[in-house]
Image 1 (cartoon, helix red, strand yellow):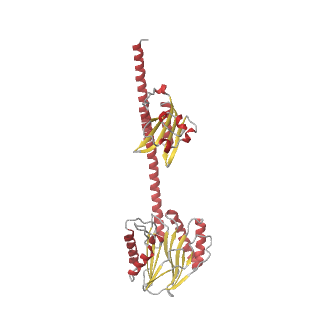
Image 2 (cartoon, rainbow, N blue to C red):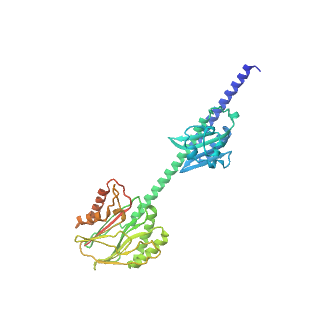
Image 3 (cartoon, rainbow, N blue to C red):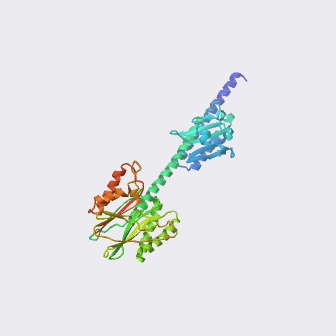
Amino acid sequence: MAKSQLVAEKSTYNESFRRRIANIKLTSLLDITKAINNNLPTDSLFKLYENILINELNIGKIALFTYNNDWKCVLKHGIGSEFEDIKIEIDLLKYKEITEVDVVASNAASIETFDIIIPVYHKSQALAYLLIGDLDEQKIEMSPTIKHLPFVQTLTNIIMVAIENKRLARENLSQVASRKELELASEMQAMLFPDKLPDDDKLNIHAYYQPHHQVGGDYYDFIKLNENEVAFCVADVSGKGVSAALLMANFQANLRALFKHNTSLTDIIHDLNTLVFDNAKGEKFITIFLAKYNLLTRMLTYINAGHNPPLMLHSNTILQLTTGCIGVGMLQEIPRVREGVIHVSEDTVLVCYTDGLVEQNNEYGEDFGVDKLKQVMLKKQGIEMKKVNTNIILALDKFKQDVTYVDDIALFSCKFL
């Protein structure tokens, strides 16, 4: 055969091959695009991608590593478990471009099983690393420069970006669902608080509540027991968020039920301790200031179960109410409960609060503290409780400035007239 004829036949073969490869690339991209537009599941996208690499491009060995919280091999072909010694952070993360394995220095012997490392990036973030080997150069006429690998890199990038977008979309839907759940939980929690507090010739009460998130674990309540007696409380669950709010909702229901059948504060505290310990399995506890007030005798009976001591102000003297016991749910049984009893003079002010108020810090790491709370109370004697609470929060905001709130805050302030 004449040399010119051989050259012509080779040229015809090369042109035919280039057309076939071009057709494979075009068809592959169209198939992938169609699959993405049809929102096929991740497994189906991987199967289509694997088919293109194996059956169309005749790649014998494949290992695809992707990142989602940690690196994981999500696709493999033509290999056993030898890839398991590859540490992406150490062996691959340093490669930003397509690299031949024979120029790679690595501690992972299994990398030598492959021929090429193909990094896949999106907006400077490494999404995946594709290792391929056992390339059929005769079938796809791979040149020494491995000229078709950029197409493989592009194809992998398209697949990985599509899968990443699907993951982000799922996360977004999950976040939307979580927000709706939190909104519902917030609405339900708001229903637990008393919608009306007394403001008459015997009591002037005002409360303030600010959850750290949409829902929180702080709680206050006011219960009219009979014509002459009322009860009230301020409580705080250890921890924050939905779990704390759920435990507090259960606590509120039990507290109100117990008051219907028993007005002994000591017995109520013991019963609440059993309920909280059983429900929380010892993992959470509740601090509570629980009080009962007789409108006729002006006697206030209370138990402080591990809570921040409320401040009682009368004639420029502030008393901290500390008598009580440990928080409910801390132990299976509370070893000792003591009740405090105080005769309340006219115009006495009682401010109950949770630790989110006094433990709020400023930019220097200093706590707001009880002393600053006392100062606000002493300056604002004689005014209604709503203004007292407002002034306390204003003082807190001025103190913390741009520092974000670190915890739930509840205030329950009462003036005994």
